[in-house]
Image (cartoon, rainbow, N blue to C red; front, side):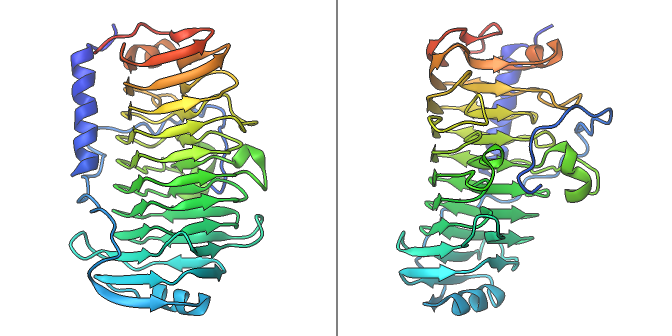
Length: 352
């Protein structure tokens, strides 16, 4: 039986409240070990990352690449690391752990450019086990990946321009939880390998779990991806991997005109995601897709108020795979699809 719409709507609200309070890994075949979550194994949500700001805190002004890495190495809760306009060449790493009450801020204008150089090199900005950083306003360019967050908690990436990278632009990985990716512009990914050119990437493919998370699911849970503008990606603007749970994808704008290694803007393979208020144009097949890569994943996802201008053969929202996925997915009738040869969705809409 299909889960009652009112119950799934409630699950979506719970996911929203929880979020508000691989290198370049690709989709792989199913594995016999599901690693599907249980209600007792899900971690509790961390405090919500506050809006990023360059005001307040203990100010540390930076004008050179050497000063920037030194400031990152010495960062302490409550500091504001402010970059002057200019080009900062290198691969920058932040590891400090702050608090929700006293975050560390890394900020500047679009004229402050973190330049990772060759697209087959390292990550341009790497938050490694960092907690409660706010990175805002900057331009991030070059490198294999633009911004990588590994085992990060409560960080906020806000109002960045991330462009011209080898693989994906922004990646939350290795059990990174309760982070916010908000209001960023993403352009021109996949310059090294088109198949790895996602815009925003959450979690890791199951084929990389033994490398990334001790052969267990990469539980990059309860992350919020909102208000981003993603275009010029060679793969999906947003890829939500198996192993992730309880995230929110809302009010983003996608342009798939340059996709050559994807047939949708959003590919959801995690559980319990709320996908709402997003808008997309230009795709070779579908607007949004749900998949089961591993048994037990791709379940209980809720789509409401999304818009898809497909102008192609596919669906606005394609819930692919076994009946268990179709029965556990809610596609609200308030979603819209224009120019979709298959129509709005391949399941019965409801719940709104």
